[in-house]
Amino acid sequence: MSLPRNIKEQFPLLSQVVNGHQIVYLDSAASSQKPAAVIEAMNDYYRTINANVHRGAYEIAAQATEAMESSRERIAKFIGANSANEVVFTKNATESFNLVARSWGGQNLSHGDAVLITDMEHHANIVPWQILSAELGFEIRWIPLTPDGQLDLTSLDQLLDGVKMVSLTAMSNVLGTLNPVREIADRAHEIGALVTVDASQYVPHFPTDVEDLGADLMCFTGHKMCGPTGIGVLWGHEELLDSMPPFLGGGEMIVDVRKDGFTANEIPHKFEAGTPPIAEIIGLGAAVEFLESLGMADIRQHEIQLTKYAMNALNNRYGDELTIHGPRDPDQRGGVLSIEYRDVHPHDLSQVLDQRGICIRAGHHCAKPLMKLLGVGATSRASMYLYNDESDIDALVDALEPAGEMFAL
Amino acid sequence: MPGLDDLYKEIILDHYRNPRNQGELDSPPAHRTEGFNPLCGDEVTVTFEISDNSLSEVRIAGHGCSISQASASMMSAAVKGKSIDEVREVTRRFKAMMSIHEEEIGSEASEQTSDEVFELGDLEALKGVVKFPVRIKCATLSWNALLTGLGELEG
Ligand SMILES: Cc1ncc(COP(=O)(O)O)c(C=O)c1O
Image (tube, rainbow over all chains, first blue to last red):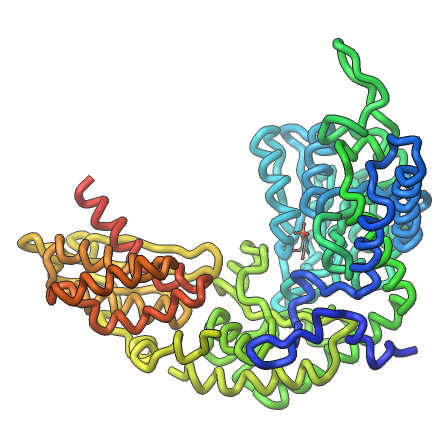
C-alpha cells in the first residue's frame, strides 16, 4: 500500500551533505533525483553494449537497438498507448511541443484559426505557438483562471469557437492545480478540435492513461520522472502522427533520399532525426520500471498525504503570515506549493534555506503570464516527490521563521 | 564555503529596511530609467536630475530582493551630488568589484586606496555577493539602469 520507508536510500544524491546538512530536496517539479537503478542502467549500456542503433549488424549494435526499443515499449504501456509506434522520443517536453506546433500546426493552422491554451501554461506550451502564429497569423486564446487558481470554464463555448487545437497542462507547475482535461477534451472534440496535453507534471506523479485523458497528443519530459535529462516523449495516436509531416530532417527519419527529394520513414522514426540519445532512452525505460515497481497509485497516495501534512504544518505554524497559491484541497492538487511568506523575497528565502541544505526554487517557473496574474515577479516553490517524507517538510517549516526574522521590515 | 554572513552584512540589511532616496522625481524635468531582471522579476526605476554637470538629485523605486534593493539604495547615496565623471567612475569600480574574477577585484581594491574620491565606502559591504554568482545580477541591476540613463542623455 505505502512506499518503502527507506526509499531515499535508493537515490544516491539524497545522502549528500550540502552546507553541512544532509540535503533536503524539495525541487522535484524542476527536476527529480535519479535512483541508482537508472544511473546503473545507463552505465551498463556504455560499459557493455554501446553502439549506434538501427544500423550495425553486429551483436552489440543489435543489443543496443533491442534495449532502446524495449524501453519504448515499456513507456508505451506505462501511459496506456496502443502501440510503441505512438511513442516518439524527443529531447524534452519543450522539443515535443515545438514538434507539435511546427509539424501539426504548420500543416493545419492559418489566418482565422485559433489555438486555445490556458493562463497557467509553462512557456514550453506558449512560445512555440507564438513563434508559429507570427508566421501564420492564427489567434492564440487563453482560458482564464478563478481566484483560487482553477481554470474558469464559464465561457469555454465562446473560447472554443473556431479553435482547431486545445493545448493545456494536466497539472500546473506553479499552483499544483489539476485540470479537468477529460471534460475539456470532450468539448473540444465535439467541435472537431484536437487536444494536446502537457503531462510534464502529471506522468511522474499519477497513473496515466492517454485514452482516459482524452488526449490526441501528449508531451512529457524524462528528467522529472526519475529519468535522465536529454530525453522527452511525444505520444500521439498512430493515424494522427502518420498524417503529420516530419519535424527535423536527417538520418534515421528517412527510408530513401534522392537528389530530387526524400521519402520519410514510418512513425515513430519519422520524427527521430539523427542518432538518438540511446543511453537516455534506456535510462528512461529503467525509470519507468522503477516507478512501476512502486506503483503509481501508491506514489500519488504518498504525495497526497505529504501535501496534506505540509499544508497543515505551514498553515498551523504561520497562519496569516503565509499564503499558499492554488487549490486548498490536497486531493485536488499536486505536491507543488508556491509560498508567499511575510515580506521575504523568494531569492532571499531560498538563499537562507540553502544554508540548511534545503533546495527550493525561487523564480517565475517559466510561467510569466501566470506570475503577472498573481501579481508577483517570482514565488518560492517547494515541490515533492516519492522520496520526500515528513522530515523534509519539518525542515522547511522550521527554516521559514529565521528567514522571516532576518528580513523583517 | 561562503556563509550567509558574507552576503547579508548588517549594513545591507539596514539599507534594505530603510532605503535611502526612495520614490520618483517628476519626469520631465528629471530623467527616468528602468532596470528589469527577467530571471526573478525584480524591477527598479531610477529618476535623476543633472545640474552643472553633476547628479544633483536621485530617487529609487521598484521592488526586488534584499540585495537588489539595498544595492540601489547604497548607489543612490553614493552618487548623489557627484559629478557625472565621478558617477561613472564609481559605477565602473562597483561593477569591477562585482566581477567574478578574484584577481581583478584585488587589483581594483589596491588602486582604490590611493584615490580618496573613489572610495567605495559602504558599497564594499556588497563585495560578498561575488561569492554567490546567481546574486550578482541583483546587485548590479540599479547600476546598469543608471548607466543606461546616463548613456541616453549623451547619445
Ligand atoms: C508543466 C511543464 N511543462 C513543460 C516543462 C518543460 O520541460 P523541459 O524543460 O524538460 O522541456 C516543464 C518543466 O520545466 C513543466 O513544468
